[in-house]
Image (cartoon, rainbow, N blue to C red; front, top):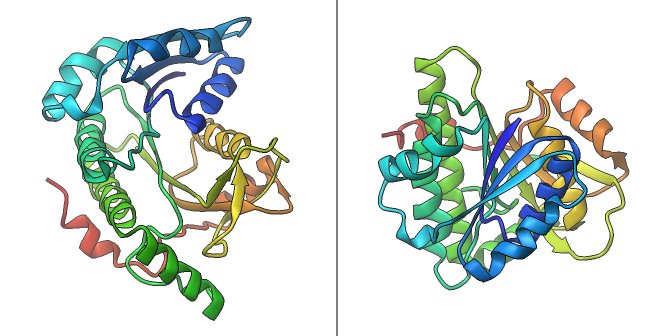
Length: 263
């Protein structure tokens, strides 16, 4: 599989890259600075897959045509991952760059899958499976990081809308995945998670986030919103369960309204 990762120097992206290379996938990592190139290329040492690097600051993206012509047409990926984020330019990266890339990817003929890294508070109202403690945590998260919550939500909703537009035009079964891990830990992964309809707030090792993301991309039957925290299920079992039970954390949101933002 050919994978294109935006935000390739991020912790989740680098962990994903290593796991993808171990599966013999071909990875193209988009990074901002030349100083990051060597460490990204070193991820391919003694791996089965191959890695290429593209240097492009996401702040400089003009529009979806720019992304298609300068990046997508060159590497022709099967799937695209958006793992970028910026505390200093939240709307410029987490919303605007994400939406430009989503539009480009969902209209590109080689792209069959798109995975967006988001977070559980990215929703317009409390989830129907939450209790009062969860609602309090959700409200606190949104109030503490209002710009991040808003930017991520707009990107999540835009991916829903644009993937539906793609599916209406193309019956090949485009997979749009929003993976929504709670607070990230740098401790070693445990291989045990709760995936799907989780509590509003939790923790999860970066390595486990990466393993879940790669596991979701490796299948042809994954799509929708998946919240993610530490749990008791093995990662492969958690993904199997989410697929088997049709779990989608988008439940409770107004999906019909989301469809209207497609352009």
